[in-house]
Image (tube, rainbow, N blue to C red; front, side, top):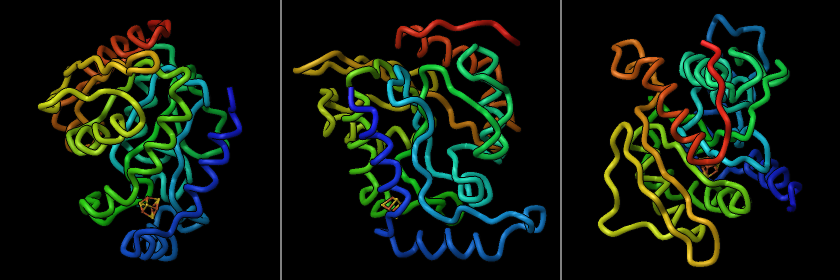
Amino acid sequence: MDHSGLSRLDRRIADCRACPRLVDWREEVARTKRAAFADWTYWGRPVPGFGPPDARLLIIGLAPAAHGGNRTGRMFTGDRSGDVLYRALYDVGLASQPGSTHAGDGLELYGVRVTSPVHCAPPANKPTPGERDACRPWLVRELRLLRPTVRAALVLGAFGWQAALPAFAEAGWTVPRPRPAFAHGAHTALDAADGPGLHLFGCFHVSQRNTFTGRLTPEMLREVLRTAATAAGLGTAERE
Ligand code: SF4
């Protein structure tokens, strides 16, 4: 298996400047900063996926947060959404530690990789359809490189779901028509003509709007993570 392919892809993603609005925004946020992070040198670039190149479970979010991934350079790192996601991954035995504060904090994921269909922080967390489509080839390449090992994908939120389905199709899996609808707990098995299939799961996004209101509780997240990990052939543990 060519693990260096994914490292090369990650480096290429980090250099991408294809979306003028997002390039302006990510760099402006990096210059102006949030007062609480005034001492930080913001990453201010596209944020590549994070996790081992032989992951069996892929988690797909929406896009990096302006003062989270766009500051730290690592997916879901340094913001409240990431606190919820990595805490849950730790609780079910898929991460080495419950916290994720900066790229050098020692966090390791076990058999899990985290990525997003849009790699740059968008204003108001809302990429345009054109930006979503411009970024899709990166997700397609990532999926192709992961195909030898990945057996399940957990998509966080309807935006990621809509963005990811065409990428799964382009990467070689068969996506049913009509396309499966997003729902928390949704499960669809995608076949592939030339290799193993993929179990696709939906989960409400770990956004503050969902977690603060109780729409997505820690137990709901742990449960869907356990289900997706089991489908991927990963063992889980009970740490909570
Ligand atoms: S969103 Fe994706 S395609 Fe657009 S600039 Fe960022 S990395 Fe490139």
